[in-house]
Image (cartoon, rainbow, N blue to C red; front, top):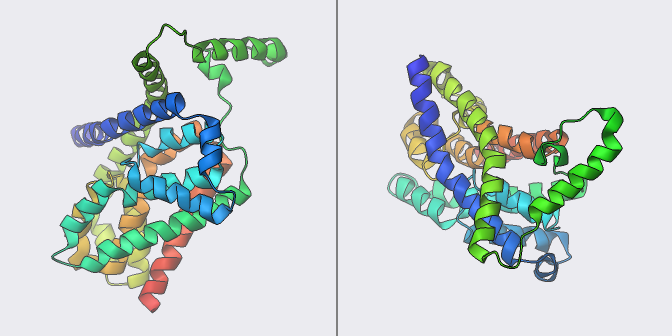
Length: 311
């Protein structure tokens, strides 16, 4: 069992790491090239249009579910509205061209409707949750100043030490005019990557344990009940933590057993949230925000898929 867990852990980690690196590079490029004022100009004031802008960004930035977290965090730090960052984070792993192609290739011979339903529902869910989260939350990123400057002081020195941390953190962010653009991007990429990768490792470990320990027979027991099978495959998608570029092929293998609607729930939930990304999110965002986001994702996907069954 330990051997199997190790193999799955390495597989999940190595599968996720390139996309996490890509996300960190994009995040660094945004930090360097795009000003706060630019985002203020291009993002509409209307909350619905602004949220649709985030989805539009999700189509053109080929970010996997691991890569979107550092990018969305950078967007929020650039004062991009919460609803825009969230709609981008949820939609990109489903509607970016790489995932669309893999989904089409997996299902075009067996059930083309799954491809279109995944695309349409991905947009709808991202829009709804983006708007709700934008209304509910204004401040979502963890205040990690003390971590960033490695200051581990007692609370009775908080005021003086917080000032020191602020100063140290600002010095880390500065770069001299002599530094090249490439050097600056590399520095920011490294900072973003190392900030997130520790949580990815922990999440990948938990996901690998779930994959090895969870009996597949238990999943198959509920395959004949359309409503229960939706719930089972949503939990299955959350626990196994597959990359959104490859989950279509697993979904295709389960199609004959579970049916279209359950597979749709699996293909929608996995890219939006899974156990490894929950750990990464909790390491970067406030816990109330993360738990609210997870609850909304599960609830709205379940409701939409049940409506498909009923209608």
